[in-house]
Image 1: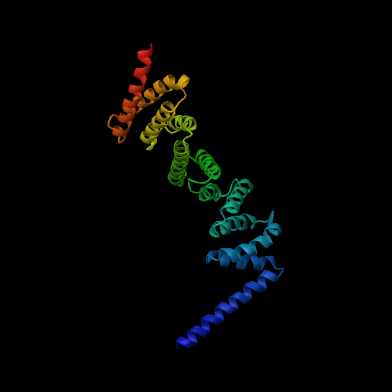
Image 2 (image 1 turned 90 degrees about the vertical axis):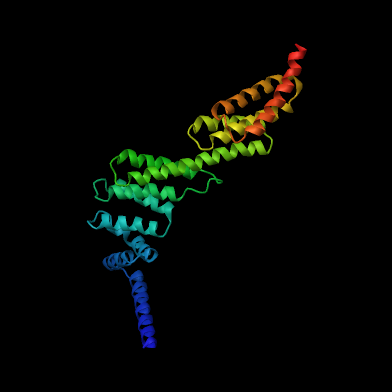
Length: 266
């Protein structure tokens, strides 16, 4: 019985493959549309996409064009080709502003950009584009059923930009470019006032200022020591029980000892 079932399944698969190849090579756009829709509904997005791509130009201006263009965009999304999917959904939204699928297509366009956002350690240009697209969607459809999902994506992407900015500033500290580190942490604290990384940013900004001051040339040392001290007080003012209390306190004492030398001279 199992042998015959295997043969039957193989026959069905071969027949369907033969039908697909035959339709792919044919000139009947109606047959391509019908089989493409069938394959699309079965989740065979790559095969459906090949058929759709052949007939899209022929359906421009026809009643079925809206349905075809929507499935065409969805097929790219199903193939995880988010770059083209985002473009095709945008194209659909521009071409059919009165479509009942407009909101969904606009959301999936923005979501396609979200899908292209890389890990925080890489260039974040796509992340910024995704935030912009998602915000445009929210502005256009403030009552959308996708509002919560879109807002969640924006928060996730913001957190990625936040982590990227923090790690850049910390990397400057690591490679001992302390002036760049201080400036980068200043920018980070201004741009992300509610960040969970804020305490660490205050500490590493202070540490960078401390390192810069302690190993500074003499004519700039007093000014830099006083600046580092101010960063220490910023840390303690914001986080009296900071996890860095011991390290920061020790460095603060070293700064105070150095500053005594200047009070003696004066």
